[in-house]
Image 1 (tube, rainbow, N blue to C red):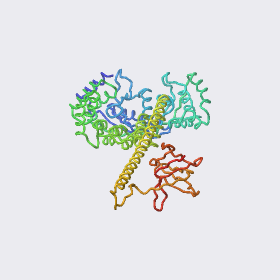
Image 2: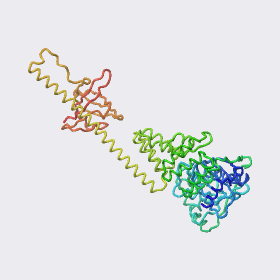
Image 3: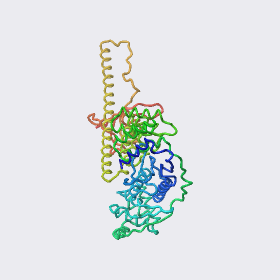
Image 4: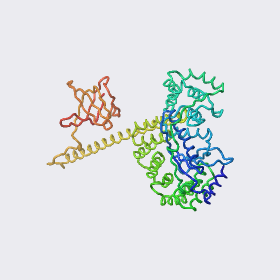
Length: 554
């Protein structure tokens, strides 16, 4: 396969692939390039669109899309060529397609998994996503009619596959099976999905499904596909020479050819005629090889040659650090926001960018965990809790879900301890400051007394020592504490039995002392029994007294 790709690349560079022979047609996420004529290109696109339609309709999701385009090269069959497989290249997913035929089930299984990954927010339980992909991978198309249910490879015929296949291909249960699949795709567990679809437990179907699987005779379901006229729906245009020049190298990159060979293919395209697509591909290969400076030069050449209206080059722009431009070129791509968040020093801005990324890539548990930690740093605790739960919900396995739950508990415990330590530190600082002020005031009083005893203050007015608002002292009984967050109200009674109410503006700033001058805490609610206290407070004109300190008396 690799040898044929190299020859394909060399032929393109030598002008063996004439641009006049190549055409382009597209629909939805698919782009088809072909040198086998308009009919073959339309046939390939028609098959792809029918698969997209049937898969989406059956699972309750219309108009499926992908984060990156799926480029299909429908070309004349080559003897000994490997079966088509989806691979990620310079600008998205790339694969070949045997003109006049169709790829095997493995290609459509990969395509089904790609649709699931890029269109659903939740994960199906267990390995059901692979099972559903196998179920649809054998879909065939003939004269506008679709046939589902042909058995996949023996190792893919699990009991879950047999159960779903038997229900989907039975006309009596086909409609309810679509409800079942839609529930599973929305994240419902196996039992809940069956109750919602059939009003019965899954176990009531499983014994029959096991007999069906053991029998080895599997029925199929034939139904009409999407009403579509390929000639009208898929206009054909000549393929742009700039894209044809990089097509061989793009294919080589997507199919995992050695980097040196891919780099040489992009360099040949540049030698034929420099263009942004070839420089982007060259830069990506150089970056993968560790040649950062040469890659930077290639990306800069790419940007200089880019047509803003026609060329996307989102991956090249990302590697240049132009995250906003990269996001504009591909609005469904999460990576620009992840990279931008990594260079943000402030947690609030970092959390904002990571939330954008998580919304675009909601099935990534690692991304949700990063967001949860950033939100915690930004003191967005309620949002952080939601992000941790989202990470658990989209975990790829039960083991991963348990690891995330443990990480959440450890992270939250560390946060609680840090917050408690910070509160204690602030209380100590406030108490130390209050003690310092009292010591300084006492020293001034003693100094004044000393001067007075020596006659130094004769004829002078002695000023009050306290520089804050005037304070008063109340001694009585504390009956209840009405808490409202950091605020509170103390309900007290004086020696005559008269009720007195005082306000606590910030509980963290009130010094509370017990017997022996040890710092204690006020407890919310009715005090059982009522306690004798001495309260230091400031009197506010027209308002409730504001508490500065509370001392519990023996």
